[in-house]
Amino acid sequence: QPSQAGCARTARPAARRKPEARSMTRAIGSEEQLRSISGTGEASENSFAWRYEGGLVRYPRDVEPPSRQPQHNDRYAKAKVILGLPEISGPSVYRGALLEFFGTTLLVYAHIGFVRAAVAPFFVPSWAPLIVAVTNGALLTLFIIALAAPSGGHVNPTITMATMATGHTPIYRGFLYIAMQSAGSMIGSLLMRATLGWDEVTAQDLAACSLGSLTDAGAFVSEMMFTFVLLLIAYGTAFDPRQ
Image (cartoon, rainbow, N blue to C red; front, side):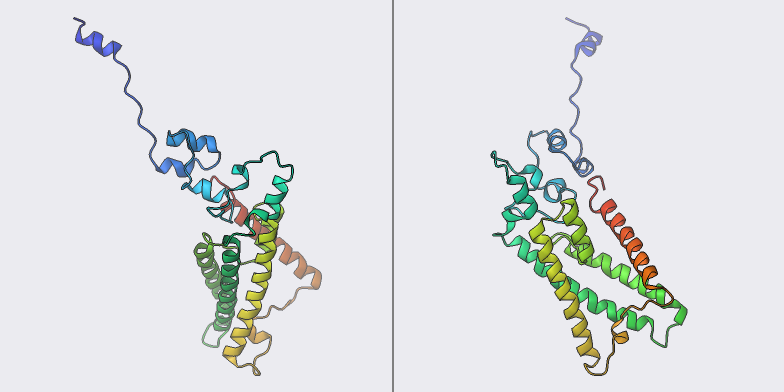
């Protein structure tokens, strides 16, 4: 009989254990990566990558992401996906638009309240910008987290228009979102006006912005630059599948 040492030399190496489940969240990206990690030969439909595709808008269960949709030799298949035609008949896009409306309404209403509280006499005047920045930053973060799954958590036409330009949001969904966000912002302002007294309030009471010492051109450049800051943060966190 072979010696014990010989058996040790000829024994097959132990099979490697499969990666832990947490590895799936690090391998967001291609379908091949998901197949190799799961070991089943099929990508899991419940995985984060399958559901979100590295974007802010979630694809519902009845509509596959563009990269997963079969073409069926349809020369217009890609155009249909970009326009959002496959989801027109489904409830997901309208549910998302409705949530964007309510989210923007509540956000604007709370924003006006925070600004009014920050400039109240019992606060040090020099603290007002800091109070507005911290409270609105925290509020917006919570709103994005709350609305990320059902609607994408845009609550800002700038984000919606940018994602339409880069293909993350279909055209139909994007225009619907912008309409509902605009309506929500107006309704939020009207509700705060009704809260404070319809005939007694002015535009400044509703936290309207002023140019201050800036010229019209300076205000435009400032808005443009800070808009790019917003888009850089959004694309670097919510759109990068490696995050």
